[in-house]
Length: 248
Ligand SMILES: [Zn+2]
Image (cartoon, helix red, strand yellow):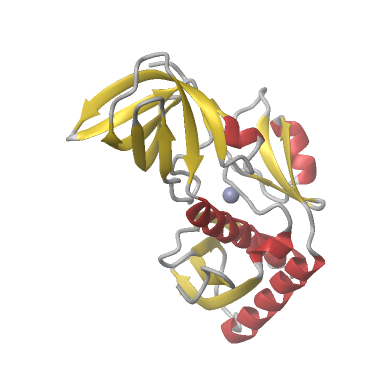
């Protein structure tokens, strides 16, 4: 299958764009649309997939699920009416409410990384789950002698300080060597010798392929729900407050 150009990697603000239909496949009573390029975020990096629609001259396709498989983005869903022609130019529209919440939750997860670094806690990030149904970030760390209630307040206060500073989010592609200079933590799986994406919150870099807020103030407010030890791991559960945030 042809690889899909990932527009969201370079510009995660684009919620409408054009694309060309490369292939249409039926699978498990669903249709899968393959495009030459996409603004739809496929699930990954702890962030849920986008939803939305793809419109053609005489067809409308509802995108229910988006997956990345071996370089190809699969837009999975069903036609509301009509069908696309191979080679047809179509218009992609990403559901903004869902994307904005997912971006706020993803950025908020990294705000916790920043707070933990500033608080000089020597925790290694191992997992981020930025889904609206119970977001958390997990770290490898010794949990002995931790005052979890105090930490909860300290991380929340530090995180909200960053949000109030309203730092700008920037995207930079760089190789792994350079990454080690601007990122507090560079995961093993980042490939050597080719540029990968780093999200910069001011001078704090995080290797990440997800979608983010443009300015940290767009997160509105960070809430630390709970800090829990889980063997050698510490799980920090959090949420964001504000429109379509915690009151959902
Ligand atoms: Zn990330």
